[in-house]
Length: 442
Image 1 (cartoon, rainbow, N blue to C red):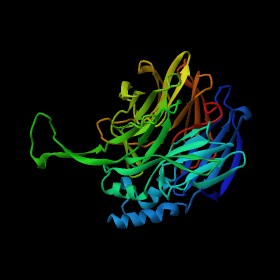
Image 2 (cartoon, rainbow, N blue to C red):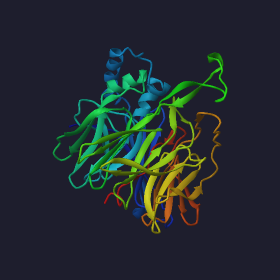
Image 3 (tube, rainbow, N blue to C red):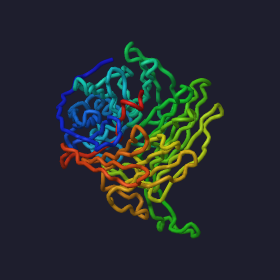
Image 4 (tube, rainbow, N blue to C red):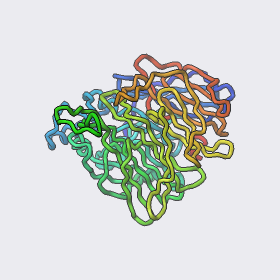
């Protein structure tokens, strides 16, 4: 296992959550055009905020040469990158922070969007490192799973060549390997290998270690010809072209029997398991794609409730809503005897869903955001996303976005607390999810 120490810059400021019972949490930000990111660590018990800036400029070379070689092998234009991005935009996307995973000894693993190194941060000693897990310079899944009982990190990988090939054909299967990595022993063991996808977004195991779920956040779109009227045959010349999402997939493995299933999902995002029923999980289907650096909304998203058993996955319900757009974050928590799914609904809503019935429990509104035009497909987002967490007692929701924190009591149904975060500039933006590591991970 190789590692590279990174330059960091620390700052502090007082920050109180005005009596809300939220855990310590981390919020990510990127500095556009600088290949740098800042991680804001909110310490509720100390009523303080520490920010740690990490400079990653030049680190794209770790897999940049591999991508050049793969493009040459498959005759891919060297100026062509996924999602219509430029070279600098692509590497900035790849190295952007997305999620957080608590490891051992106060180490936090930052989930980078698409890269062949893990970013590890320790807020107690203020250091950051890029870690090479030793899987042949392959790209690594974004959000992974750590087994606290064995000290093993589970993740997936694929070759940079696979991503180069998917520039030409985003529907093409590529070889994927799933690993478990005992961090203290610095050894690695292959768990599974087979055909799947790139852009692997989250890997998660059920609490009893029976099932593994791996999601692909494809974000590709393609132009399709469509008739102006379903009941009217028209000539090819009169057909209009519109962009449609390329289907994503999820992989489900039964780790005890070896059975596997692949399911098509509209922009497969994240998966969370139920806190009460260990073989029930909830999948987010975002219905979004990347158009250069813009996020395009193709329609409402869906949260699917899936039960896993020896016969495979079974759909037990799903939730959607006309305003259920760009559902970046979903969390599952207990509130007054109910299991709720909290979802960020772009641009200005938090949806709370009753997990038992998959029906709407409540919508809590933020300040008015941009208007989403459902007739324009895709609608290009003009605002940043935001992340959410629940309080320790399940009574409140916290929202963090670009430069702000909002808090709301669920039963009150409105945001009563708002505070700005110092340190955000005009080139900074929130990206990804909030990380909680001092009570949900215990």
